[in-house]
Image (cartoon, rainbow, N blue to C red; front, side, top):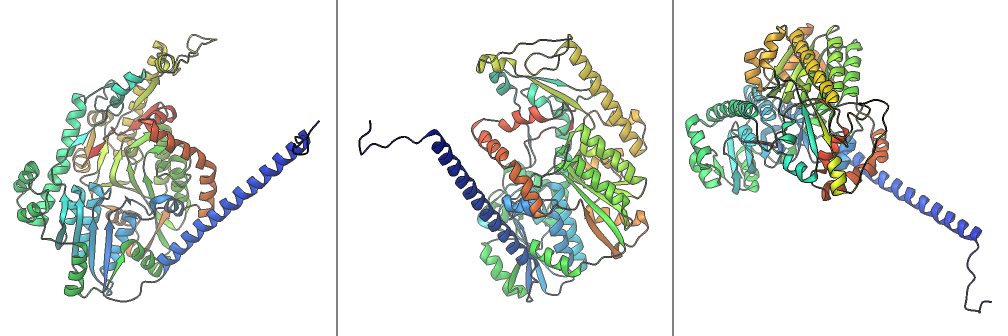
Length: 598
């Protein structure tokens, strides 16, 4: 019996109905909110695109090359822009802007604003070469300013007509150093044992050493010392010429850190003046009549659309930037996706308007299967038309394999390349599970090696021998690929391979690279090899980008996974590394992992 104030509990059917209605309402509300967010994001993107495509009006412009944010090879796609890359710029956009500004009567000066970017040495070289072409084409000034300049940024800024630094800023002029992170101590504490298997001759292939050592091997120390000295010697020579200083003086300044602080930098002749950003703008107005400063990436977009011509002859430009991985891109992560590059090469080879292909490589290497697929695609494309390789900051290991069959290879003096070798890694986490987490495993087998490659117990002798044969065989395959592609004897390739990293300058001397220069040189060589006039050629970028809607749909499917990864990475030290072990292919052709080379 119940009183008046007491309520009877809902029946089972009514409870289920109420729950179902609640779930439907929540589902509809969530989807409405998602649609509103998507519409807002798309509206923001459309607004941004409309702003970028709006013609730039007025005269007396200064073109600002803003290198205070992330710099990539190719401009970020629309989805990447929505997810945080909107403020960045690309070498592609900067080169377009500099080239067009030389002949644009509206542009009175280039304004290089540096500080805080990820600009690498080879990218700085690419832009410095563009500055040289700009100076040869016109008498307009290049003005540089920065607050916190990295050494590659200073290397670029040193070629400006006027170089200024913030009165409280810093120039990190200290010479080059390389630091390698070693995880063995962490793995020992976690109870994880990492197996590293590499060809017996690949002593320089040191990528896997970060998991099994606590310091650099002698071979790795030798190669790192060699290539950082090659880069630094070249950079000092260029900076000394740009600033009319003695190379020995620059090294003394670096040794003593006597150009680090603004007042010291001014006294040593590293910079011309100390001032604030507003002072630079006032000076540009007073001396050069500049009344408006325009971002180079926006200028590149508008000028590119205005001057775009569809010539009959085309050169395909394919960007291969990031780690080499199998599969297709989802649009939010920069990597060299094997399927995408293979398709781009195949499509460009079949396109009758395309007379030559330029493959722009900026990769430390990665998965062997993807590398092999792309290498095969380069060989097939080369049967139809010239394939010119343009190396940026990195074209090493798998990044070199996909390059070696190019008709010609063009690299910067500071490019890191080579690293012709392979390794395999396999973690054994049985102790971690048993001792740290209390998890045990048991097995039932049909054959003695059914669990020989298990992550939960030590590698069997048969499995180790099989993996050793695997890496030895692929190393022979890799060196033979290079020998065939470069027209060299395999024995000679073996002598310069063994996993060793070379700079572009060194690589040219030993035959791994044909000539030194940047992307414009590679495009001109492509036109020459194809027998066409580069000035009457359209450069067409492959692969074609997916639409914003296609990218957003793929991202929405993967969004939860990315969110979980981000949270785990925040609370578990080196979670990204642990995840990488579990996902990467056993066989890798990858550059040694260097935490910092600046």
